[in-house]
Image (cartoon, rainbow, N blue to C red; front, side):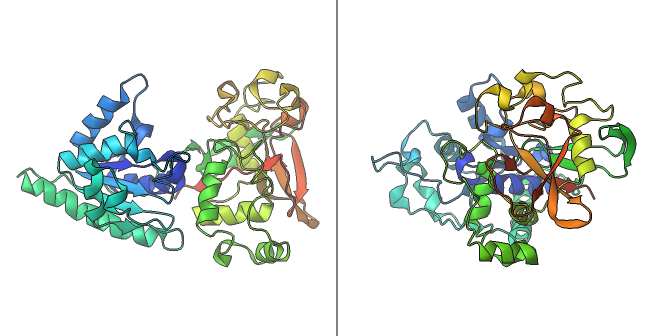
Length: 396
């Protein structure tokens, strides 16, 4: 049974909610956490299913960001005014059952006043909430929330005169949201398919970094906090007055589920530090892209123009990171061929320390460039509509 239910809006707080979810499953275990629509089985009636899950939970976390009550056009109404709104349905169900509802305030949000909420959920305004800030305060705030949840769950269980279930120790190998595990060991690397060995397991992003996730970095003042930037990167950002990725306002490529583009190596590096990840090495990237047996492309040895966004696809721009499910790598990564080049940590020229490696090819290149062994390099300040980011995370 899920002890904790997390309610959130994907377009409002998906990235920070994913980080909250990761911390909670490390502490309580995956089975104890229900994360809203992400946990709904395919084909079921989500209204009934959500109501059933709320009924089973012991604590309800309402993640509230700054766009949680976004207006619907020029009507003056918000999404919560719609009785079919999923977040409203969940909160109504929790309040009706007198389940403890805790507002979790992210991205500088505050609890909305009762007068702006539908009568059925106005009680939310009188609940004591907890802010969960961006780094460097994120983990400190999460420690406070986790300590409270431990006490709350234990107290509720004792009130029902049931034995207290022991808390699960942190599951340090639990895969974070939207990442896949790549196991250590040998694989065939490069054009000549030389046997190489990676001596550590690691997680890598399932998809290229999206605009939706990068937006959270911008809202968290990622461009204004020097703590996330290398000394060279901060100097570059300041000298060029950089406040967002290039193409950030270009409607052709800034859709939420499209890969963020127009990010330099410095910006990719800063985002990685903020989110607690890092850029992959070439070898880590390539093993995730081709598996152990060294095929030419993520899907095999034959060119297949239907499995990646290359110039032959004819879009002339980036596409959704989920558009090519038939082109995934052996480890389950999307878009490791085509769509956008992806920054890696290695220097392109060892003797010239201003170019970094990029892998994967892009929508601008033909399919020959999408071979997973193909390597290219760009200046660290390069920002283009065909270069993005995929990150890795170490497994302790």
